[in-house]
Amino acid sequence: MKGLQTHHRAGRLSVLFACTLAALATCQNALAQMSARDILEQVEDSLRSTTDSAFNRIQLSSCQFGVRNNQITCAERARVKALESVGINFGPENRDTRSVTIVLEPPAEKGVGMLSITYDESDRDNETWLYLSALGTVKRIASGNSDDDTEPASIFGSEFTTEDQDTGKLDEYSLNILEETTEGGREVWKIEAIPNEERARKTRYARTVQYVDKERFVTLRADMYDQHDREIKRLLASRVEQINGVWVARSLTMMNLVSNRLSNMAILEINTGIDVPEDFLTQRTLTDVAFRETELQKLREQID
Image 1 (cartoon, rainbow, N blue to C red):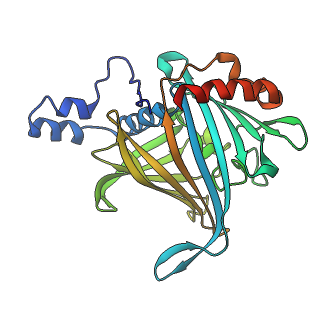
Image 2: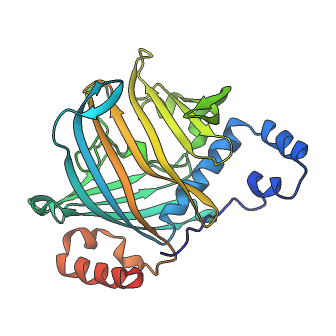
C-alpha cells in the first residue's frame, strides 16, 4: 500500500513538525497560541490526504441501534455495502477535491455511483451528481437546504450526508475554542462552529462541536445541533492510525439521534500516489459501464 501524502498551505509549517525542532516549552506555547481556525485547517489538511490521487476501498454499514449494557449495538442485521472511491486534489494549493465513488455490493445496487466536487472557497458551491443504475439517470444534488422541508442528500442510503463529507469553507463559520478537555482518554480541544447567515440557509446544523485530538489533529467526536439546540447527530471516530506521518481515522460512525439509526464507514484500504486520469472523474464514469470497468481495472492493477 502506498503512503498517504498531505499538502499544507504555502508558508505554513506544521505545528507537529515544528515541535520536533523546538524545546518542549516552545512547543507547548505554539499549541496554546493556535486559534480554532488554525486547528481546523490542520484537521482538514489531514482529511484531504485521503483523497490525494487516491484509490480507497470502503465498507459502509447501517442499522437501527439501541443501547444494551451501556453499549451501542445494532438492533437489527446491518445493511452492508462495499464501495470503491477514487479521488484527486486540485485547484489553488490542492485544496479542492474531485472524487467518484461506486457501489460494488450488494448486487442489486452494483453500479450506483456518486461524483463529488468540493471547493475550499466559500463563494463556490460544492457539486454532487448521483447515478442510479436501475433508472440509468444522473441527478444533480442540491448543495444545501433551501427550506426546513428538505433533507441533506444521504450518501448511499446511510446516515452520512454530502454535507458531512465537506471540507473547507471555514470562512462561513464563527469558530471558537470552548475548552480543553479529554475524549476517550485523549487530550482534545473542544471547538464550536456556528454558521454565518448565508451558510445557515444551506445547513440543518445550527452549530457543531468538534473534539480535536491535540496531538494527532483528528476529530474524535462531533456533535451536531439543530435550531432548538437539540443534538440531532453525533460522529465518533476510531481506529486512528498513522500512515506516512499523517494520522487518519479508519472508522467513522454517524449516529442519527432522531431516528436512532447509525452508519459506520470503515476505510479498508487507503492507497495514494495513484495515476488517476482526469476523464475518469466525470459523469461519463457514472453512466458508461464499459468505460468505468476498464478504467477501474487499470487503477486496481496499480495497487494489487
